[in-house]
Length: 330
Length: 113
Image (cartoon, rainbow over all chains, first blue to last red; front, side, top):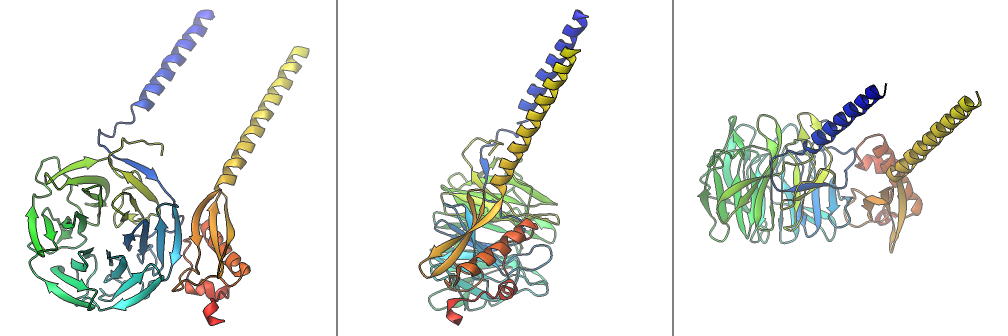
């Protein structure tokens, strides 16, 4: 009787030990650096293909698509206070796949797709007065373009015009409210590409055209308005950076390409070192795999959220700490 | 006999305590997740904040969707707008307020007064 009891204890003990060991060793996500922390959940407001910009410590995002409707509402996320505010509605037709960028403290959103047509109209947003103003339209309609503000100008290029993918770039001058064509981008036509800006230089890569995920990577110097080719995104065998519908952002002198779509939504994250022209894989985004997300980055902090995976639209936001060890519990 | 009774009394007591503990614990968790709102008094009118427990989820100093910085003209207007946002969130809907939502609540800005 006693022997049987002690056997039961032994078996229970071994089973418990096994349980502890397996639960500890489940933390095996490679040894990639980078930690993700859950932030304010934008409850019940899933939307993807939103557009936005970051000014100081506030991330602005609006328009987009929730799976049923194209949206016109516009929101601000306060990085310090970790809360949202609904701002003045976007004045143009509700849309998704627009571009958003910032020039000298003013936000811009334009182009995109309203469910029927690719669009040209563009608007500026004044954060101090919470008002929108229509500006000159982009000369050619498109969606899924890239847009960035640098050196006092806005730039919009690539994308899809309803019939073809594009490779042309346009420069917006807010002083005379005019667009001029910018020649010299040597890359292929594409849609749903990504950019990030490090020390005044704009890096462009990824995207898709005719079902091919592009592997070329470029840097744009706005002072000379010239494009220079960098090492391809498949230069090393262990790179898997190519994708479309990703987000790009900058943090502490490094560039990042995160989430996106490559035959399905992905949550992988790659870090670009401009000094060595090399990429390193980071801890994957902690939330669900997603495409058409948004990143808010003020250079010191970065938040990624929204987007979709398949037909499931997502509503969460995570802060990314690329140099920290991964922790599951935060 | 009496020892069996004692045993059962003890067991029932223990289970009851455990049950009460878990119920109380549950309700405090729920309280922390409960959505509620507060009206914010501003210089030129009113705003609101939507809270989950002690945490601010949405801070709305100006009428959502309206251009410019237009406060709510009364505490009551801020409150009924905030309650609509909460009911949307509780129904798993988006907290977006459309112009039609504000019309239904008869929300007006100072400008139109």
